Length: 64
Image (cartoon, rainbow, N blue to C red; front, top):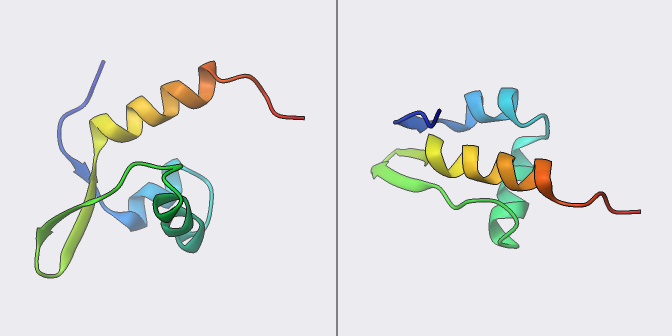
């Protein structure tokens, strides 16, 4: 079931067990969904985008 809403970086690193800097690097390299700017000081990721990324990681073949 797809959830509606947004997830902030501090909660995202709990869900995707990598560092904040790795998340930002992956965004820059287009390996991870880009966040949206909700206000001048608030950036977050749509939960649906994260769920879609997670589903793709589960179905992708493992790299050697």
